[in-house]
Image 1 (cartoon, rainbow, N blue to C red):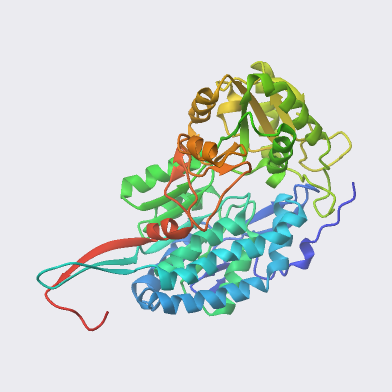
Image 2: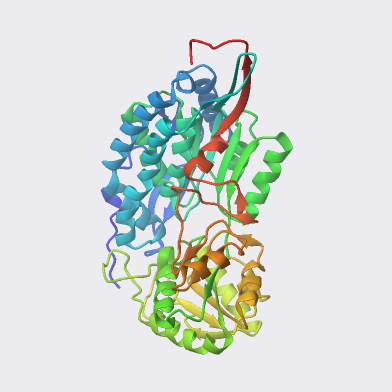
Length: 493
């Protein structure tokens, strides 16, 4: 396989600095973070590594911008005007965003090219909310004017994961900025480039100093950010283990927190649905981000007497998947993002076999690819829902097919999980899909396809997280509610 990196097309002049208080500043140490290509296994970018002193500086800048600056004192409509310009500037960097995602994670280029417009849509939705959301509510009163006013929560730390760094970061900062909060971006150390481009665009768009800041850090400095008394809220997307630590820290100091964590989402295949069509949908879904997708449908629940036929169709669809250079338009599956993740997936394959599941196809690295963290799309058949591979989030291109005896058992199996992020019912009957969707304890349910929308709300039940992102449900966590009771009607509203 030949691969030609596009990393050099991105201007890296700011990568050895941090964006704090509206300026690019030198970090307090010379430490750096390496971004490794999952295709070539070579370093493609290097960025500054923040330490606790840099975190303190970023918090101080955000704190000053919130406590003394103009941003939280603007009207929502005035902030929306800034966000419109911010979105315009972001769109001028669409090509850089696409290259950064492919170079850092190995996501196929066709998907990376579509991501910027989809991701920047978070700002468009926030701009629209400035006119539609009621930041001040009037409530009946016989003695004057009673108001429920919603004010910004304060300084927000937004912590994004490595699998979808642009979309998740913009989904957090858009509502935070509309609400009037100031923000400290902390991207994953494996994929920081999108956040650097966001910071560059914030400066070009004229966001006031300190409103949006950037630090890039490993665990110790990141932990300091979460623990910092100057941070009022943490919004985190990532693993369950890290989310548990953040929730514990925020609980100790009563900081606000939103968590979007893992998933082990179920696809329930009803008997009316064509199995070949279902197989193509499921395999297409598992190829998205090489299976490194928290909302992916990774447990497939099907009638026992249709199990073997579905597995046959899944195997046929999987062996047809082209694996290789993510810039090749014919390729449908790129590599996993890092060596550690590849080794984790390999470990789960061994567990699945040891616990008695049937490895129907895949389960190894492609024999014809010499370098890169590639892994074949994999299907396990005859999986019992109690097996490790059915309970743990593997975060790779692995499907588990679980037989059931009837619809009630299918729902029970779907709910027998510590997670509850997404799911789907494969059927042509909308009434049946709705009936089952209301029984499955998960944040999003779709019909006959992997589904998610940030225009309404996205998030999970149980250990899949706390709170929602997107829509009104995603704006509210960045606001505090205040009741104001007056004897008359103020002129300043």
